[in-house]
Amino acid sequence: MKIINNLPKKIDLTNTYQKKLGIGEFEGNIDAIKENSICTFWANKCSGHFPPSNFEGLYILKTEHTADGEGRQFSVQTAYPLGGAGEGRVSVRMIYGEADSADPTGSTGTWIEIPSEFTIKDFDIDFASKDDENPASWTAMGKIASGKLKDLFGSVSLMAKNLRYLWKLCGTTNIASIGGGTLTGAVSKLNTDLQYRDISKEAVIINPSVTLSAYIEGGMVYARSFIPANLPEQNGLLFQLPEKYAPRLPVHAPVAYFTNADDVGEMVGATVSPDGKVVYYQTHPLVSYGGFIFQYPLGHA
Image 1 (tube, rainbow, N blue to C red):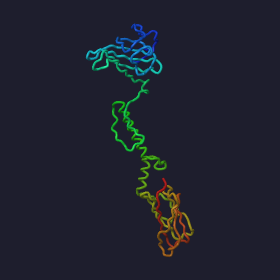
Image 2: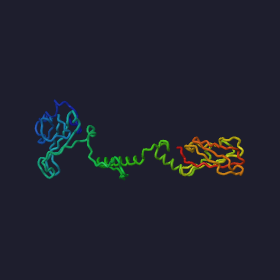
Image 3: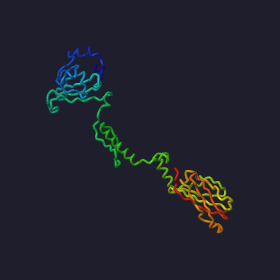
Image 4: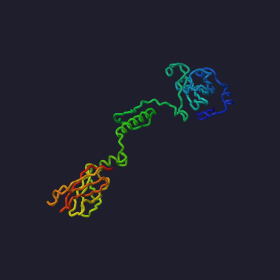
């Protein structure tokens, strides 16, 4: 493996820079290497503190000796596992020669694995999750800003918790038939049904002698009309409401008022069916018209 732009490139290990440096394969304690060098070592043949990949095979180890701004001598080691589960898992550490305030153990340093396309999928992110499988309330959250990865995951977990709470509020009732099946559509539909709306002109008048006044308000349908005088048949079609304004079950309305005393006591009225058709019924033709009123809950979507 050759080091180019700090990235490992595979080469023939039988003819490498190790031989030119006079080092080759190292056997011993890798913590004790202080000189500038590049060598190979087998983890099962050496001792010391190994990289976090826990790879037990062959490594290339680069050691660079230098000093910090205060003149303290230390070494930087970079380890490149070759093949197997360790492939691409590059790690670095700093080794101070003697114990001091910066490194009280005298230390071998702590290996830090460098994230790469090989390893990012295997990293564990330590963060405080704010998710809740059964949330009881909404939790306000601030703007997601640039920062540490653990803070980002904390915000994402809080988003998950709030989404669970919203889903819980939505319930399990199927609203596919209301407002296109969306929450905003359903709310808009319900709001529209509660408002006053004249639907008289949406009806189809069948009997030309009939007039109609119909409207929706508070989720109820109100329709006022009349049975004309001198209709020869005992029953017939007066008008038809759009099916979306029709009741779920047939609704009957007896004549509420008569305009001629001779009609009082007659069995006469009208029925609106689930398809919106309004049919009158009578035992005898009326001398004068008789009015009726329908009132029922708006039942269709």
